Length: 354
Image (cartoon, rainbow, N blue to C red; front, side):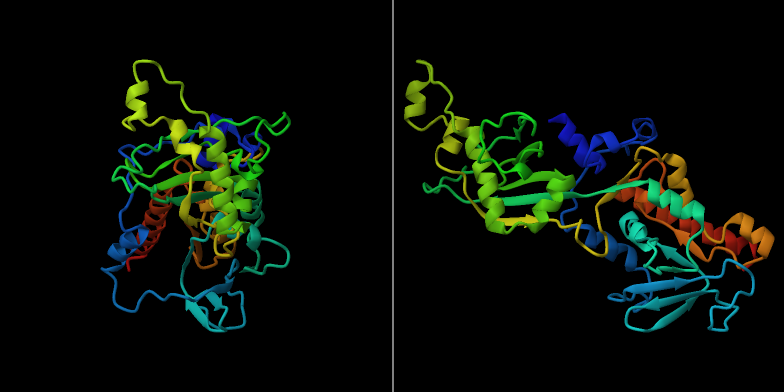
């Protein structure tokens, strides 16, 4: 059970691929964890509210980024003042002094492939090697809406427990063969808050990917079968509580499962097959280290290239959770990395006297 919890925390579908020494560098952010009532969109809208109207352009997918690792290198657009050329999928082009790349590590892994052409010229070896070594996994959330009981009681949902589940390992004999394989490595199923009728469960690795392919009906059937297997044995009644139980004043967990648990709605994330993400968040895999996270955060051209070739500085900067050495895999890590790169550009222009 604890192993499966760690799989969702780290996004490592197999914990044997996780570098435990590097994990020790990870730092928890202080303070209470909260749920943003209106979602992350409210945070984005607040940050964007101070920008001029129309500055943010949406629905423009980038196909290729051209940059100049050497001074006076021509990319065919004849513009030495703005060394970066961004090609969009709609055929349009934007010239820029700097671009901050915040795509996921999953997209970067796909982008360094031999047929990708995401960067022209390709990223230097120290970048591609760091991208290749770091781990990037899939974690998905599953939300299920409980259906009301037939008696219409106001506290229908207050009896549903925080259910932690432990299963036989795949190489052992399964006692309940009807439980689907993709349910057997989820650690818990519980209300999202006290007395809520919405349950939440987490999935990682190949189980998370399988969840993305299933229909709502298949998910409901699989979860209901699992719950019925866990909750089908009523708690033994003692003489002191048998009268209360018979009057319906006490409900054992078994009573939840005696009639099959039913759901009305399903909502799940699909990070693995989303072409704009190709996964959820990063981890330090065996063979990589925190140095790779730092290497991913290095701007291009590199310092060595600048000194030898005199190419324009800070053409491509990198931000996102996979570029933060101690807060990778988190939203706040991604946010801090954005502040870091903004500060890098501000310092550059302050030094230039602009």
